[in-house]
Length: 130
Image 1 (tube, one colour):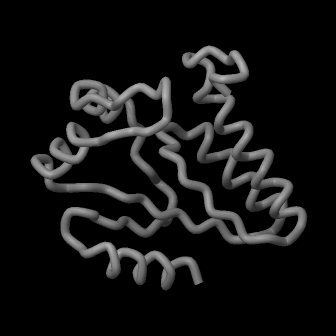
Image 2 (cartoon, one colour):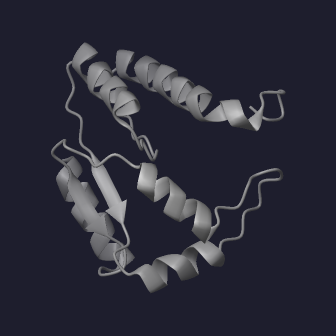
């Protein structure tokens, strides 16, 4: 989107719109869809619920958290992105975004990445998705 000239301040909503359009088309074709998105507010969450209802499919939400603040900060501060032009998430920005984050009310699986191995997390996610 940036390469096409869309301002970085406008890509958040646009990215959700693109993801929802792609998911809608795949669901129309009766394919399974996995969406990896933060969904920090109710509006995009409602859009996913509406899309699932439209296609009469179940919506399985998996929320990934890292309850160990020290580990989370280390992960944020050591991230290396290879995509040119992307903004690195700073610890200060994460704290700001966390303050703006609306708590989930939907049934969901919560996976704590600081307490469980990646293999166990994958097993839990796959079992939940079935």
